Length: 281
Image 1 (cartoon, rainbow, N blue to C red):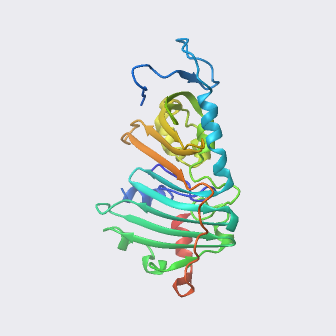
Image 2 (tube, rainbow, N blue to C red):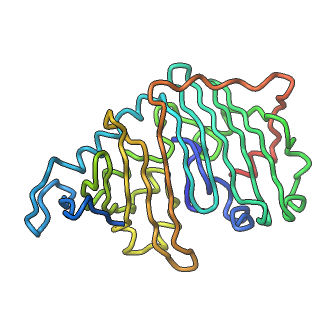
Image 3 (spheres, one colour):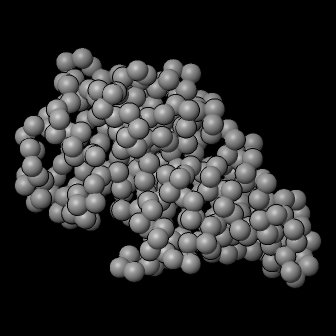
């Protein structure tokens, strides 16, 4: 599992403990003319090709609307997916996460709702390993479990910080761009130094460390919508150690048009037991 962030920014894939996670198991051109390459500072490439605007600045600017906290998103990588919405006007957010698949020893699905000051999570565990987990019967599977905010404060797995609403830390990631070029209208490609991506929340520290020097030149592609807002960011992680090459893809949509999350029905809510907090700590 490599995608990480459920707390400060939201979601994603490796939000479970390492033991549990272990169970769940380019460049382009437009036409025939190469696109100009721009360094992180926006300077022309050594080849002297002319620079048509500052591609990096365009991508930095593309993440600004995310901070307003009104959008839908998806995040996928390493066999895990997440999708949801953030609605800052109502101080609410909702997300659905799937980790592992039908062939996994352990697969997990989470339905998480935040509606300040409350949070709930519904958990589904499947696979041969599921029934062997300690205290599985105490986890109230199938019910929304109301979370004690004092017990999840600062917990990036279960908490949510409405001051940091970006699920993948795209603003931090784009600051790490080391090379970028326009590949068409609203499309870009280049490399990113992801050594600070753990701060962004989109990669965990172990994955970054395994990449070694490759972490400083991870290929990426990006798209912006007609208003210049980030709509897609894809990282192409090279193989590292025992981990195969993989793609991490994040998308943003419905800027300014998301709706408030829906609180779970009262008859489907129970208080979360201690075992739930232990599972995610």
